[in-house]
Image (cartoon, rainbow, N blue to C red; front, side, top):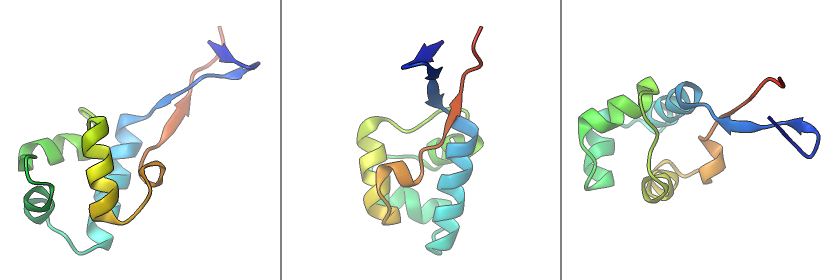
Length: 84
């Protein structure tokens, strides 16, 4: 798949989860503290994000960006699909 003659980019859940984990640690937050600050997000969900099993919803991405003090694209990671 190509877009404007470049390989298409898609969200990389594993790399995004690792970025969320690193930003959380840089802010000195435990998973439990991040879940509490996020309000309606369980500890299990945050672990799933960090393992790349799923990605946050758009609403949770905005919430995470505020909690972690980075723009949304500061924790989203992309990978490129190979042509063919």
